[in-house]
Length: 299
Image 1 (tube, rainbow, N blue to C red):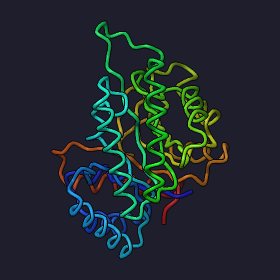
Image 2: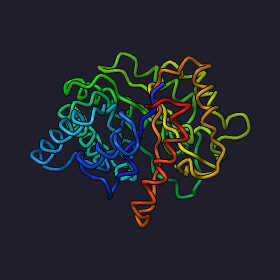
Image 3: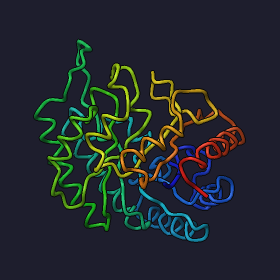
Image 4: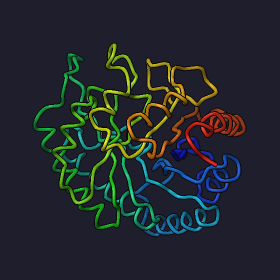
């Protein structure tokens, strides 16, 4: 089992590869990261992206760090992306993702992913149990096109991160199973990055549904990576492990092993207020890694 870290904690702080690579290696003792596209905007000019990709390759080589994948991050997630009510916005989101894949290819990153998008809310505020059929058909067509784009840039995997929102897709294990089946045969495989904190929220899940086991049973073989966060099970907190909560790292490790997923990388994904001091953030991340590394891997 390998422990890595999503670079979400670096946003607006350690924003260049030279900064975050040294910090991850020397302060946290980790050699596996997941790039957040909150640090790199795929719509930057090509010359800026080319330099950033070269800087990333250099910094990671110097500090013996592997970038497992590039993930959407919070900034782009705030848009409705591939499920926006306006087709033109969906087109723009598809273009954004293709640019993200191109950057990954230049930076030597072989996988990319994140949540897919959200439909618009209804005027009566009633949340349906599924997105409209036409939206689903459009989504799968776009994902197949994006797989072709990813392949052209040298990527070998794409990731979908399920979210616990009824306006997004997929938000249940059954929906994830259906989507995976419908994307079979894509130019590069679509897999899942399962966020432990998403799976245990109540609502939308209730009782026995608010567990990771239904996800592992239904799409276990398609899960390629795990996000871990501390949570109270009520909201998507993305707390670190200096906070009290209901996520037990030892139970996470045991559960993954029981389902034959002990070889999947686990990424700590935490967010902090921008007003928090840099020293406090680094201290809390360092202490969280110290809690996770003995049971989830790491140096």
